[in-house]
Image (cartoon, rainbow, N blue to C red; front, side, top):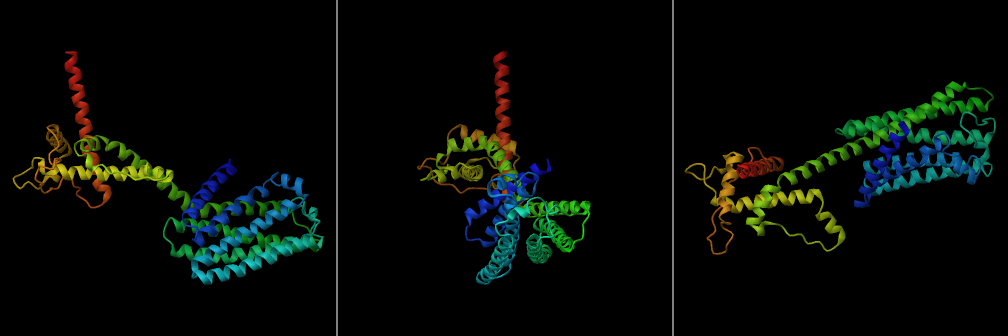
Length: 389
């Protein structure tokens, strides 16, 4: 269950980051985070029981262990690249990332050289590996030392950014920092275990299991911390999508009435490709287009609506039900001002919000549309009752 939730969150985070990379391929920090998450996702199954059996069956026992460690090193390298690209100018960040990449390449070459073709000596887990063999101990010690270095640098940068960042980014960064600190601690403990076992000592099995569990938990915290602002932004985007979709439907009575009276106020979309046609049909574009069309229609009909006082400039203070009745009465006889033979008349305020902001304006339009819908429902009920009589 936990693994399913973990991979679901990780897949959503990777999908979101890939979308950002496609939109802005020159953004080096986003690209680094995306590669970091991809490497973490690829290495995680290899650490689970039975996850390495397929690779070991093809490439030989122990090959999955080498690949897992290489992916973990790459995860930490791309994490460092994110900070390097974010904290420095473009050229300086690239130079430092190249130096770190060269260091990573040397470490990977060293790991492969230490193990050689006999990677079957790495078969099994860290707890069951024969650390008395120099190449086995050297493999785990070299990988652990690089991880400690990369995790320490990433932890320092993460804490620095967490103190400077607002929520929700700071929350995700602090969770990431906890995961990095736990991973660094686990790597340090395992390095000590390697030295002890290589010298002929023993480590209790329970202690090995506890450190392995700490590694799994720390990787999970790291991924959750990196994914937290992404998932939160995705949830916010879903809520906005739902609100726009609901408002678009609620505006239909007002839009239909005004669009029939003033068809020129309906915006035309020019879509020359399937992608443009798809974007034109998106909920957000249809929502904003309908708001503009409703407001444009109200501007055209506003001079012909009855004023609420002798000044004739306080139509925005009329209740939605009163304004809806006036709007139906005026448009029932035709579309005033739509003909080119009619002298243009200055527009007056209609259904203006008491507060500033686009959301307040949409609320006024939705209230007017709801009043039109309620009046139409009442008329239908009255006509139905009259027919029964």
